[in-house]
Image (tube, rainbow, N blue to C red; front, side, top):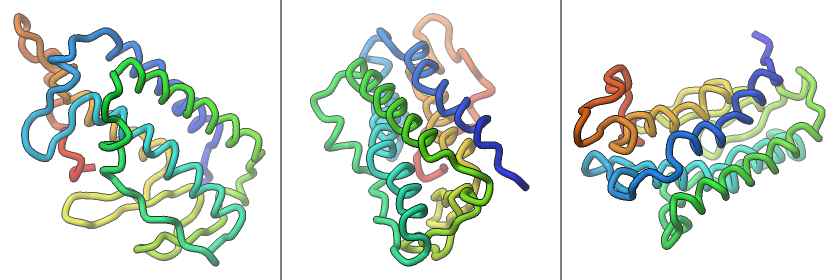
Length: 189
């Protein structure tokens, strides 16, 4: 199936504004809270997205285009956001994410990728050969699946939609019960 890069870029472009609309100016008691052990708060999810902008998708895209299968990607530290996000407010993280995503999308557009470029192959450190259009995504239990970019960036957003910041309020109870099927546990991505 041919990858529709303009549609992917449209989705990636909207993510910062969507997160900003959902999270900016919410009380810290909601945005810093998680659902328990091994779950992430809204702040953690935004920090994770920033870490991915810096160290994952664009650096890997550049490696595929420059080296193909000859050089393996650097392993992605799924908890690398923890130290990077320390002492930053959610507002600072939202602004940083918007800036980084915009810069990365500008770089992606500058590549002027064609379908044959998206079919180019790279080397994942654990999985071996992957294509530029189908990045590997960690799943629970250590397994990995390959999905389009658009699905890859939605995983953390689904987690965010189930975070205490967006699913509950003291007086109204659950706001989006349909989101309950998505877990805030990053091992479920």
